[in-house]
Length: 277
Ligand code: PD2
Ligand code: ZN
Image 1 (cartoon, rainbow, N blue to C red):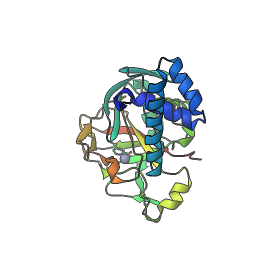
Image 2 (tube, protein in one colour; image 1 turned 90 degrees about the horizontal axis):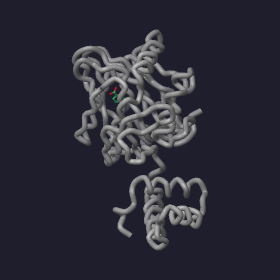
Image 3 (tube, protein in one colour; image 1 turned 135 degrees about the vertical axis):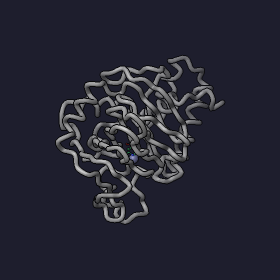
Image 4 (cartoon, rainbow, N blue to C red; image 1 turned 180 degrees about the vertical axis):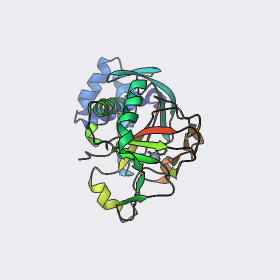
């Protein structure tokens, strides 16, 4: 079996079937019903499941992943969303029209009275504190706090085939001119003593969606130094990235570059391995 025949969509579909508890026979029958020749389908099944077993043994869990039919525009829950750029390693997807102009504006308006200097989680203790690496202001909505948050959460869940319950509440950040978020990883460093307390609630973070609520006049890109990638902040667009292992080898080091002119507003959604209650 040439792995070139196994598209990422097929690979995910096979893994999803297995994880949903369907027997190999049932999956094979479904593949044959959609036109696969038996021997080829069997080889593909075996190859995907062996690779998956090796991945799990290496400690990598399931991660959120774009549900795609390969089209440049996808219908996601309640909205047409554009797939603008995809990077395989690190896994990064840039999306267009992810939020409507009205949704961006409403998030900014609802967040404005609740903004305070951003804090970051202190991995050593599990607490949080103001951090010089993060000169933005921010607030958190509770998950499902209002109809708009629920709608966006459902859209993200559908986009990435990831349960709404495994998501943290949406965070809003505002960067004034000169403000930045220095490069960091979003996962919790398992080696830090404070991480075990954080991980009890929902497990590791495995994916991030940063949604841009406005277009700064200059600066403010989300940078991925290990991938040589800068994603410009454009109102309504979003960048999704996933990290199967909480390790720098995920190449998901990323930062918010200084805003040079105007301000920058983003909404961030972090996705956990398990239900975040
Ligand atoms: O605002 C950004 O571009 C940005 C960059 C890096 C946001 C985050 N990280 C985050 O919220 O984790
Ligand atoms: Zn981040």
